[in-house]
Image (cartoon, rainbow, N blue to C red; front, side, top):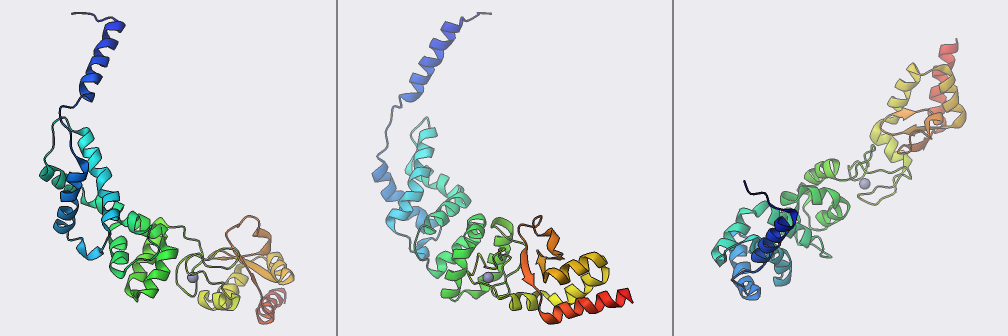
Length: 256
Ligand SMILES: [Zn+2]
């Protein structure tokens, strides 16, 4: 066995690196891109997306460059095209990200993004919600709600207007942007019924606490005011006179 000294080893790797760096071939990327872009677009049926030449190139060129970089032998244009097409899911995600840079999306672009880049769509739900409505694509809202729940930033409270779990503690909705009327939220969650059910099982002292403070904290469930600090995502819902009376009746009944 020949034992190499550290110095010899180092020299060898330097030589190897030098060898690898020196490619015996070059590719004119501009020329190649002129063929690849229309070919890939046609073969994958992407013409209907009506992307600009620049958008397509911004996405496809880095992919081509990285393939070329990794090659020892000169790839044919056809082999490059095939590699791109084989990586279709990644390409579609990258195209979706590129489209989201646009100020306004065309209807077919919105559909494409929802179908091919679920993570991106979920995160972009507040923007896509408005674009979906504008484009009259209401049938996509259920999908978008699901993606928001999975990849977006859902809160624990559902908006009574848009149906997304996106109500924040200041009673505004991250997705539709509206400020929620307490009255509407209460109606949507069946507040009266929930409150009555809670009052039946709640400690007398907590019930008194709610009546005295005049509000509860809601985060999908109703909690007494003293939990406010521990529930930073909850919203404060003030009780109407009728709701307070309801609690008083339950309290008095218990006392009797
Ligand atoms: Zn909303």
